[in-house]
Each structure stands twice: as C-alpha cells, then as structure tokens.
Length: 217
Image (cartoon, rainbow, N blue to C red; front, side, top):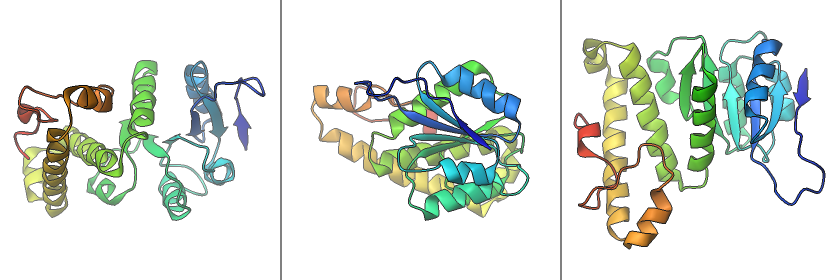
C-alpha cells in the first residue's frame, strides 16, 4: 500500500523535491510525511513492493527502513540501484549498523528513534548533495558510513576490520582529489560551489576539509 501526499497544486510553477518514505509502520511513515510535507512532495510506501511501485526517476531522496516483511529495505535499495535510480538514500531503521553497511549503496544511516530536526536536516543535506558531482556524493557517503561505524564500534574492532581500513583509504583518496579540484577555483566560484555542503570547511589554505576532522584518515 502506498500514498502520495503531495499538496502541490497542479500546474504550479515551482516543482518541489520529491521524497519517498518507505516504512512498514503506517503511523510512523505518515508522521515522517507530515514533518516533510511543508517543503517537499512526499510519497509514502508501507512496504518494499509498494516502494518499488512508487520509485521512478522523479524521486530525489529516499528514506528507507531496513527491516520490513516481504521485501527488505536492503533488497529495495539493491533493486533501486539496479534500475539506475540516482536518488540519495538514507536508511532510517532500528537495525544497529555493522560492517556490512560498507558495501551498501546508501548515503546516510539514521538509527530509530529519529527526531523531526534530525530527519529534516538529513533530507535537506541529501538533496543538496544530489546537485554535486559523483565524487562529492561518494565522499559524503563514505564519511557518513565511517561516522556511523565509529559511533557503534569500538576502536579495537575498527582497527581489526579490513573493510573499515579500505573505507578509510577511499575517504583519503577522495579528499585529496577534491582538495586538488578546489585549488583551481576562484574564491567566488568556490563559495558558490560548496557553501551548502554539510561539513564542508574551506580553510585559508584552500583545503576543502578541516585537517583536524579527518586526522586519522
């Protein structure tokens, strides 16, 4: 079962970003939709198959529960990527993250319960990222996964994980590439390109990211 809660009038000159909320608890899905409805066109799907029925290229952001009867959120995510859907995806779930998330094609991971502020900030950040090139999107996806795992796992577990080490190396490579790109921008060009990116911090040396933030990379 699914529901389109768009309140945009037909023919409106301004098209709002489209968010697909996938959650098998209807009350919770409807709550998320109510939180988002003032700024976004929201589609709700109360299960995995309903999500695939609602999914098309118009969707900008997907909020996806992992643990659902029938098609799981992981399966929905795989199918979306197989279809070539380029929406930004946040897993919103009670499933505690493990190292298996490293290979999953999502952009952010929220553990329930989530607050209205957290949900709105996540959607806004993901929509902003969707306007930038694939390397910037990948950098934020990689560092989001690192942050989730660092919050969940102890330092010893991280140090023993070959998967996490690979993730760290990829983050470092992307950071170097992005810093090189930024070095060729003029000041105005740089400010326009990166002022809205979550966590982006242009310092006096022209580095895109604060060294202290990624001192372990």
